[in-house]
Image (cartoon, rainbow, N blue to C red; front, side, top):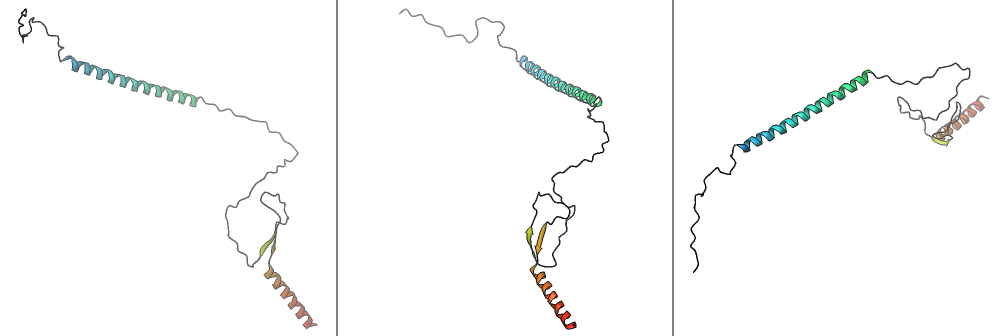
Length: 151
């Protein structure tokens, strides 16, 4: 009853004026500006690092040119007392040669070990050769027979 008929909404705006949309030309401009700023920052960073490395190399070269080593020294004096120094050690040959025995035998007694102090003339080991002992006994017996035959 008290209803007021409503009119449909018009397709055309009632007030005509400037549109509120941004022009499309500004978006590429901002993108170009951002890329330019980023590129400038990368170039500046690279130039700074190059300059810093150049400075470091120049400082290093300057330090190398001005380097004077510290040397410890002592004044030598002549003494009449001989210096005797005994040190442990192991001798190793420059060249090795394999040597084989002409007779059979074995080591009966070993008197020194690695690390023992030895002097010239010390007996290091005693070798037992039963075959040679038998040959020696036979030669002595044959000598006795030959001498008995001559007498």
